[in-house]
Length: 208
Image 1 (tube, rainbow, N blue to C red):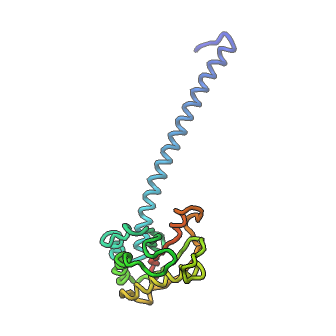
Image 2: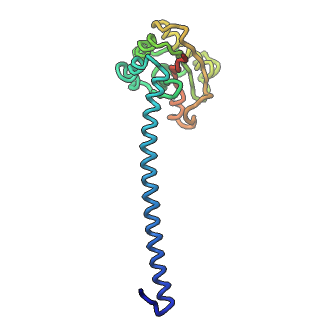
Image 3: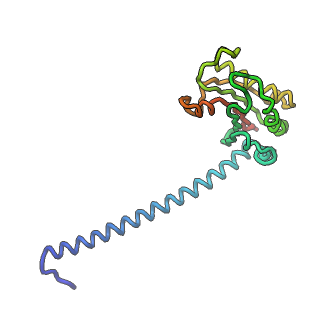
């Protein structure tokens, strides 16, 4: 056993021991945080994957295979943004894929894209909701619509009519216009306004 002749020598030795303990404690804390982050990351990744699969199965039931053709055979994700949630699958066509500015007349170039969806919708029992959205800028003088609300409604109804003409059962379809009142991004930038000018086609969970 070592004896310290001076009080300050003993104090210095104790301080060195305390510093070592603090460093060791910090290291263990960092390791614990690191492993907690790893656990949270992989857990959330697994949950997200399971949730997406569960969402598809719950939304489409026995027609899960039909729904999967949206992403494989028909390649919808190549022409539109596709999002899966617990109660629907949303297919988002941003400006200007379907319509020219201020118009509710479908571009002929949009027909093949919408026909890809028609091939799937014919076989699905699910309700299909079509939403029209615009940015918040006033319409120009060359348009026949009095407001963005009217324009968004007309565009949604035009898409609905296209699906009916292509053979989708009318009783499964509905259309609504939200104008500029449900933006997904800020209308302060051209990029944001472009994202807000969109048609959303929602395949709603089929209640059994």
